[in-house]
Amino acid sequence: MRPYNFSAGPAMLPVEVLEQVREELIDWNRSGASVMEVSHRGAEFMRLAAQAEQDVRELLGVGADYEVLFMQGGASAQFALVPLNLTAPGSRVDYIDSGYWSKKAIAEARRYLDVRIAAATDGTRVPAQDEIDLDRRASYVHYTPNETIGGVEFPYVPATGSVPLVADFSSSILSRPLDVSRFALIYAGAQKNLGPAGLTLVIVKKALLGRARPETPSVFDYRRIAEERSLLNTPPTFAWYVAARVLQWLKKHGGLEAMAQRNEAKAGALYAALDASALFKSHVAPASRSCMNVVFSTGSAEIDAAFIEAAAAQGLMHLKGHRAVGGMRASLYNAMPLEGVHALVEFMREFERVRA
Image (cartoon, rainbow, N blue to C red; front, side, top):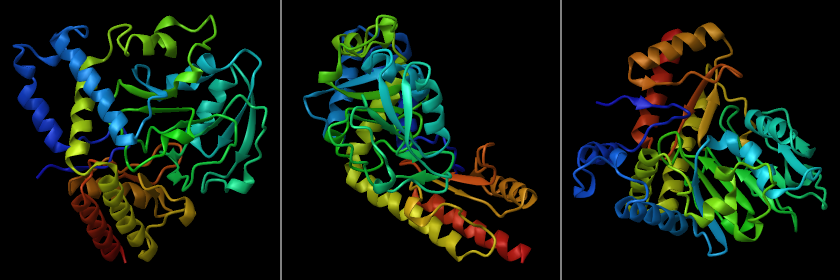
């Protein structure tokens, strides 16, 4: 049996997709070549790219007033590209600090903008709506809906009135239905729920295009990328191809409503086990618990290390928490089957029983 991979990213891909990739690797689409060997401007790849965009629009309900871009540089590049593309020098913006990745975004934005912290927490919860102090003159509000490292997630979309809302959805994109119309811009690294590392999805309102600062590199100018259908320069074609297969897999298996039900069942089973345990604990406030990244520990670095090692020997892989917080982290992205969570819960109970 294939091990269960709880890695936070690059994360596991659906086995069905991996098998399809293996089948098509040498001869893609009867072209006589691998998808890695054909021109990104060839008719075959351009059809794949167009279908991938259409599938994103269908799955997320993206309206015609938005552009869907497939970019390079990861979500971390967007920490700089959002300010460069949306604001003039000296602009004021609001950022919500909910953990590790929002702090990274804030630090990068401060190189280009006057950043104001609209809300901040201790990393064990997200702020409530009434704790967010918004500046109505801000050029945009930025937040991180799911903090991969701390395991906290917003159970709501912040209301920002007329101020455009920008969000880093890297860890939760495509895991559930989303009202894209509430956002000015969404970005997400592919390596959690969409595909391999190397590809970044950006969904941006067309009305915001054309504002890039003069110093913005051409290959990172949203307007130019949109004009060229994300083919301004050579894209990461293999990552895009795999993402296209994942999008088809999502559609085949019930879309985002079905993914949401599966993901809630997985997270619910694991949190229930943590709440019932005398050894393993989640330190995240229940109302802020992430459905994608379940962070927990025993309170002892020695016991945590023993658990991670023993779990790996049982085929429960990559459970080590991020170095910033330690402990364990089980990432439950779309490709993780419910059986994997059940196997983890069963092992946790046995590990605790033996140590009692």
